[in-house]
Length: 280
View (cartoon, one colour):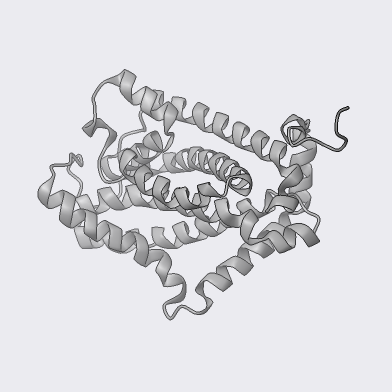
């Protein structure tokens, strides 16, 4: 005789109505903003320097990488100062890593709200991602100081940046949704996540260019498909530092891959959300 009651597998078989889910998420946009504002205030409330830490973190990493890589490794920067080269890589990476690390834990850290408040569960990782965007925006302001200090001027191709940011946001949101959902069920991921992000820093061309690994076009396209941050970071440097458009083949592959990450992350999240409040 079969036991009664729902089986855990049903969480994976749940049908997802994408349009209804998106509409519901839009209806709760004010809650998303409120949670994002609350988390920002809590994070910097007791800090003496406050939100200035959003600039300090990538700045310290830029200085460290400039001392180490510029002195001991020959990185092709296309003639641009290495400080700018590395900082333009750190900006999108910092946004991605902060969003994934904070968004990945957002459901677990907000378990009380999950049990008391009815809302789309995506609200929490998206709010964490919004906080990461605020930090990245503040950190970007440092470029206004770095360019004059280095004597290097941004190039005229910067109007491609919004397109690069779109690819970055799609990829980041997809990964953040997937990680936040899986982490509820697999607590070991909470311990592994910082390590994975650390490894990701060095397998992503943040402190070097993708061409430093290989000039093979097939390799770069495959690299862009697996890690859409590759064409985003290289594109940022191309457009802002060297004044050339992004490499369209790599960016196209990266954009398509980011869209797949976003769709896959969203569908996985919706499939797993049924039992989140009980398990988190």
